[in-house]
Image (cartoon, rainbow, N blue to C red):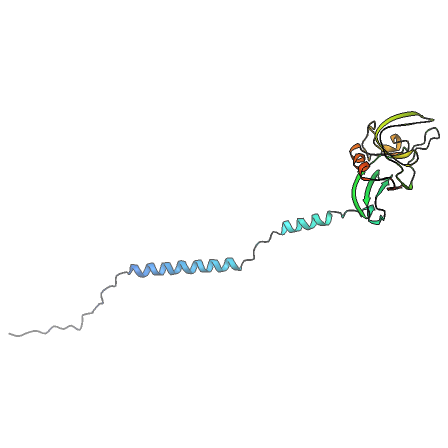
Length: 210
């Protein structure tokens, strides 16, 4: 029996096709996502933080626009107790040494001269001469007479002094004092002069400026 040999020179040996590895794909996906997150975090940290510049600018503007308070008249006072009155400002300040402890709007004398009567509050330096409660202030001039009840009366220049004025119809500190002010005294709100009466003693310095 003759055996015929097979010619295998024309045969091509093929490697078996590899099957997809699902585990490898999953690992690759996780690595990719991790790298993406890392890059995002790095970029976020490199960006400059937003500063609240608007708030800071606004605060600076407000601070610059706010005026500093004017120095108190009491800073130059050397008296133990004093009352300073400004006719121009229609205001009074109470001082204990160089420290201001109270202040109030006031009404001083009428500046318009009628029938030759000068009711301007005198300017200068005095001392409180006495202290009275529940009294009547009486007087007369070419423009008429008056008999006014006051709860507190503190004269510093004879017939000129501090007192309340329940009959006054316009606000203390108003420019209406020029035509409807006092006969020369300094009108003070009742609540304030009640406090001042108890605080000040006879001899307290009184300074009135124009």
